[in-house]
Structures are given as C-alpha cells and as structure tokens.
Image (cartoon, each protein chain N blue to C red):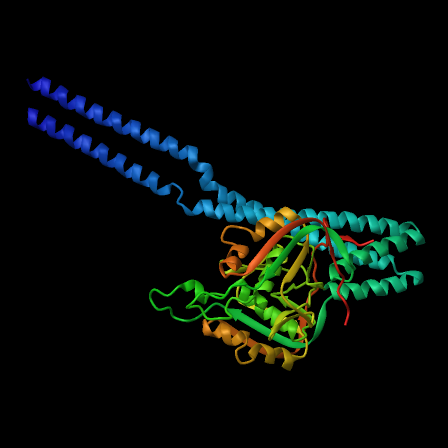
Length: 225
Length: 234
C-alpha cells in the first residue's frame, strides 16, 4: 500500500464519521421542543386548574345535597328544614335574595375634561358595552352576586343604551356607575387590573374608574316588576 | 517516513472523533435533561381529559341528587314549599324551557383579507357575543343558551382563540348557536335593527344568521351552586 492510499483512506474515514455524526446531531436538535410547548402547557394548566376548582364546587354541592336528602328522610320537620335550605340557595342564585359578603366596588364616571382635539366627541362616554365588559369580567373572576346602581344583575338582566341613558332591568341608571360584586376580593381586583386588562383599557379611553376592596358589601335583591 | 505520516493521520482521526463524540454526548445529555418540557403538554392534556370526565360524572350525580331530593319531599305538607322551589329554579335557570324564539348562528369572518389587514379585527370577540346576548335580553328573552349551555346570572363569556368559554370552563367550538325563547319577531327585529348588533358585526364580515323558530328548547343549567362569599342578609 502506498503512503498516498493510506492517507486517502484515513481522510475518507474521518469524513464519513463526521458526516454520520452531523446527521445524528441534526436529527436530535430537530426533535428538541419548540417555543410553542410552553404556551400550550400554560394554557392547559389554566384549564386544568379551573376544572379542578369546578370539581371542588360540585363535590361541595353533592355533600350538601346528600345532607339535605338525609334530613328529608329523617322526619317532617327536618324535611321542611332541608327543603328550605335548598330553596334559599336557589333563590340566592336567581337573585331573589339580598346578599352580603366581601367583594369589590368599581366606580366608573365619564371623563371630566374635554376630549382631546382630533378625537370625535362622545366616543369616550361610558357605553353599555363598557359596563357589560366589567360585569362579564367580574363573573369570569368568580363573582357570586353583582349590582349596578342598586340594580341586581340576574340571568335576564340587560344593560342597554336607551339614549341618552343606560337601562338596567328596564330601570334608568345614570353615571357615576357603581358596580358592586361579592366574591373573593383579591381575585376580582387582580382580574380587573391585569396589565393590558379592562381597567387599563377604560382608563386609556379617559374614563374615570376606581376599584376598591370591601370586607362587607350588601347587594340588593332583584325587584320584581 | 512512511510509518510516521501514517501515525499522524491516525492521531488526527482520533482527535476529531474524540471531539465530536464529546460534543454529541453533551448535546444528548442536555436534551434528555430537558425532555420533561417536551412531554408536559401531553401529560397535562391527558390529565385534563381525565378531569373533564370526572367533572361530567360529578355533574350527573348532582342532577340525580336534586331529583331524589324532589322525590323525597313529595309529602302534602311540603307541596307548597316544593312549588316555591320549582318557581325559584325556573328563575335561576335550572329548568328546561321550551317555546317560540330565535336561533342565532355565529361564525368568524369569511372575508378575504387584504394584505396587511389585521386578522384580529375579523374574528368573533367576547364583546360581540356579549352584545348579542344583551340585545336578546333587552328584547325580553326568557331563557338563552349557547351550544346547549344555559345562561344563568353568573355566566361569563370568554373568547379564547377560536373557542368560547362559558359557565366556568365549558368550552364551546364554532359554529356558535344561540337559542333564545321569547317573542320571535321582537327578538329578531331588535338584532336586525338598522345600526344594531347584526349590522355592526357584518361590517367586520362576521357571519350572523338570525332565524325565527316556532319551537326552541333551552336546556337547564346543570352545574353546582356554591356560594363561598355571599350570604343571605339576615
């Protein structure tokens, strides 16, 4: 074997091994996770937490119903008591009972100073949809009862501009709008004041908005028409 | 000389191989250390499916227990209270409602976007759904559901990506069908009013279809009622 052939063979060998290694390396790198998975995990985790919370609630409900069922089977007076308990809870959920509890007070008022030049006037007056969003955000954050200027929000409550006023439960409400919500004060406040969230958006429109925690709020019952 | 150069080549080959092996080893180890991140979404998704299943089971159980409570309370003395309970349940959205009404079908925009246009403007937002629901309520709808999920007082609407979240994590996917029981003409007209909700949604190309129907069924709310913070006033 000449010296040359040996050198050539050695170089070929090195090149071949290098090639294989490179190929393996590429494949391994390709398989490593992309940037999406972190977001996906985050999204799934939020879902999971919420479902777990819901399960907790359902378990409480089952325990409660089981207890009432037991009472009903015990005797007449217990039965009446158990039914009354269930009735009260359903009435509370329907908004037919005045409730008290900790929560937040959100006060919204129209911008006081003149609108900036170049912006159409009247664009920044609080609209029905702003109030709708506030209420929706509060329900989403786990509020248990809400009222606006004394009007309890129930399943069929509308918040609708009937110019120049906003009607809620077909009653006229005027600014400043005082939204009361019973629920976990910290959760309610943090969901409203999320960076880039609703309060920031409304403030950027120039709407005067304050959010305050309270230990004890009273939310009136829905007044039947 | 001959053997010497042969040794040099061998040495070179050995060196290169060694370095490559070392790099390979480090990269592989690095990746195995990070694999949990790769599997996390999958594990979470499986967990989520399981949680959903057990949630649904719990929900069925709640319905059963409510029905049994009603049965057990069938005595004549309890009849009056039972009646009151039924009335309250109706108002709370815990009974199925049937009657004339409308069906509103919603879907994202079918508009072909101009290059550079913001696609976000042409998809359905929570506020769009909120406004339609609000309009229906203002027009006197007695009961409303979206894709079979009953709206109660505490119902929130959240649009996340292409889906809507309702009643604390009930996920709905398009097309969204809103069923409302009420006076069909009043409901339909209030939506289709000039400058109304349907008008403004169609500006963005969002597909809205309002149909009057003689008989629409709005199912009962089936979740739990848990009040952790609110207490009835004494």
